Image (cartoon, rainbow, N blue to C red):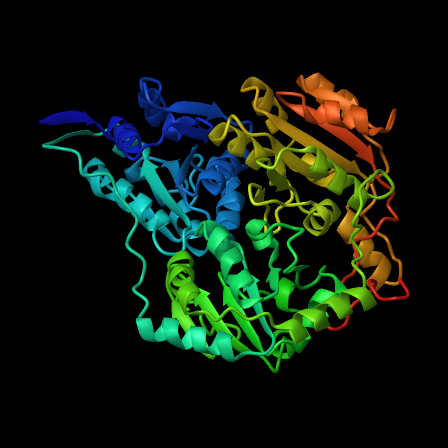
Length: 558
């Protein structure tokens, strides 16, 4: 017979799920849980400086390993601070288990100190959530939370545990078995055969891959599919690392900040093989004008995505890696010389806006240089802004790269804590975080967390003293009425980060490749500070709400 408190039971159940690291902040309503956690010999606690930071640190671990990660917060403001990271995980399909404290059960609904309806507020931004009413429920709730988070399309699950439930004594015979993810849906042979026939008979097919391909670890088989069928590959922002940047069939990211020739190639295709994508507006532009003459094979693990925004000629509900593995032997090896030649001609007529060489002449060249000087196994994170799009356009991703970025929610402040989580999960790999001066301020407090754990994170700060993408849209679409997007006070980030204990390389003082290489080789937290002109724009660009064929920049006239 096992006897323990609800808090002790929670910690033991986390241990049994294989959790070795959790991020969080203690507070009044989760102190019993923290008291029990202090006695765990298997779990290391990462004391974040803000609950949003804790959520993103957990995301960094989950996105890197593909397994559910755990974050902790107290009730009230602790829980509400966590919600942004949870919403981000929901939109990007990241498996999290978020455990929050709650006021004692008799006080729920009384407007008690630090009480909010965490359960109600979290419903729209979680895959599932629980309000635990008794300690005995924890034996089923916690394994179920891990099963739900990891099954099918991954996502965040929240468990709200009142303080009295954490302190309640329970007795039980044995722990439940650790949860495992559900088996994926079974795809019929007929669906695989039909998909193969559609690809084999297409004259101008395109393989469009998204975050689902990365999450399914299907990048290697994805590349084989493309090579066998001579199918050009385009990617969403989330899918950029699925195919190496310099592969001959890689035609780059599509959508709002695609190369002009990429969006034009999509206009000319007759079949889209869409794998692990959501047909979201940043990729499709005006969706009813997106590739109107193309048939669509849509492969996804989430049945809700099939036919949601674009009707599919063939919708396949299943695991992408399994579908691709069964599809590959049925594909005919075709050179598709005319189609590949047409895309080459487009690329010649509308050359890539992102530079193909590296250097210090532009942010894009600089980002490519950073990538060329970095190891192929580097994990790359970004915040959100111009630097994110420049990195998406220019970083030389290889087969060993991992790319962690906030795609669906577009959260400023994402990059640094996610980089910390990635470094904790993979301590032998370098983590690069491309950030902007606007974004780095959003979760700057986690600079202390990085130093505390000496994580191998290098922040590349592109500093233009403004909210870059906001500034650009005000210039282009609001008659140049730049308002509240420029910072009137230029902060000294070099001094600030030195104050946090970071190594610093200031390229404003001396800008050469040798100094940059030395900074990238530094172990532990390191800042590379690179000033950038406000006038540097992210181009090409599809205006918000327009079709992808309507692009600013990237044509033969520049």
